Length: 158
Image (cartoon, rainbow, N blue to C red; front, top):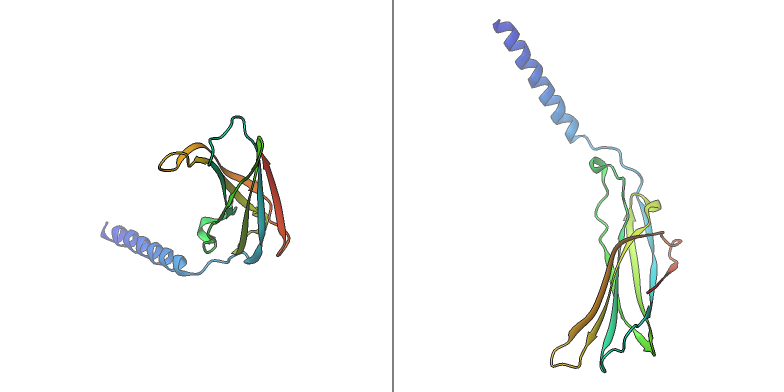
């Protein structure tokens, strides 16, 4: 009976040591790819009601590499989100706002493209402190990567 317990303990000890050694061995990684360029995000807005005098419309856009489907045991170093903002030009009942986002990353999967998030805010300066009038935001719109070093225009209409 004692031999059975000792044998089982030795088996468990060997599995534990083997598991620990396997965890310390570096895993094969997919080749990393350098990607860079500029996203030019243009917002075309239809203004349904008249804004108070002195109001401004701002736009913000953020891109994050879309690395969906990565093996978490074999993941890439962080590629951080990049953001930019713009101030709209208002003409009558329409407005146009542009946010230019330059980026340069090293990613594991260049086919993944990026996830685009944005926010549009209308702010009135008619009071003693700026007050938000309208805000709109959206998260995680999939967009392809531009050709290496190129600009990619993204047009959004509301």
